[in-house]
Length: 115
Length: 115
Image 1 (cartoon, chains in turn yellow, cyan):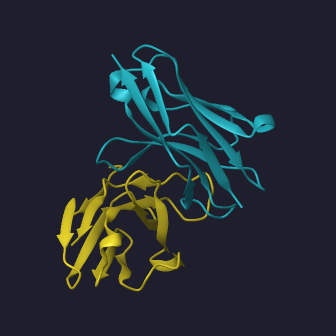
Image 2 (cartoon, each protein chain N blue to C red):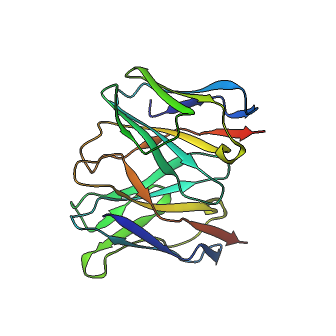
């Protein structure tokens, strides 16, 4: 199983809503990532969890709150988002978060629209 | 700091023609380089990676890339384009020596394949 599964695939939410994005992998990977991709742009790193601990937060606004309940699951909690937060949110995992030749496996993404 | 530059935001080839997508890197340490492909409304799929074991790297779907240190390049090629190759292609580099999975992406090259 080399899949990273993200749910939901699409999400439309209002600016006062609270929602969560979910990501799951069963490859035994110990590092998990959230990337944000705006239309016609490359993905940009948001958060990194290594061995279930948050190791990198790329100065992401607090309206995005990551959570790693266990080594297979990664959530991104959303609250009071702005329309400019509309994007494709990609989850990824890798065997670990240190060896530089480690490739990241990406999920299909959640297309988020904030109205 | 690590970075990659993709030359050409859009490349168009005829079916059966050579595909050449250009990527140049800037790195203060030996780079670890990747090519990913993204089909419309999909996540990213790894095509191949360079890990210093060999300068010519073969990937999936008939793609290969050659690492040229003298030119700081890692161009992606495929001898004969197929319609199914139409997608967005991203070159990426790991952020640092102990930063596996944390990727910096180029701006992407959209490949169109004409019948």
